[in-house]
Image (cartoon, rainbow, N blue to C red; front, side, top):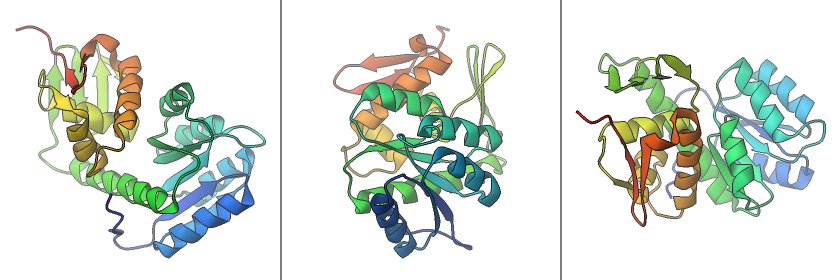
Length: 238
């Protein structure tokens, strides 16, 4: 995975929320070495207060926290303003991952992890936000209409049967990727490359978890699983 920094202009701000001081300091040191401004918080209430006051560009957020947990932190922060979240989980538990994705996390890592991998994930998330911002202001944004599913690229909004559906930035990008080639089967490797900017296939579970979260929001029947290959977005028959 490429971890080359592409941060333009002012330094990007990253809030690290972790109650273990040793882990928090190690993450902060690595991200500062990558060129980011970093602050840390060791509990839920402090994390929310810091996020609202400081307005970071990204959160690295542990699930297990004193005060209230990372899921509640994510809910409260996302209610104030959308911000990409890389969630850290102590267990390789898919239920925890799906809940995290459901409350607004964009990606997750299971402890223990390498600092190199974490830094790479941070860079990828921020590059995707930059691309999304450019696309939103592009005259080519437009909309996609697939039956009762409407995708507004310029406003990054999704409606199902006329009702707005809140998607995380990652979920939106995944849906657009599938919708640009309706009914075509896209492999997990293709989706990793297009949506996550990953050059290898080490994150196929990430794809699966995000697809499950997306299905819960737009309807499970809209995304077809092709076992051993990948996924396709179903469209109404002509």
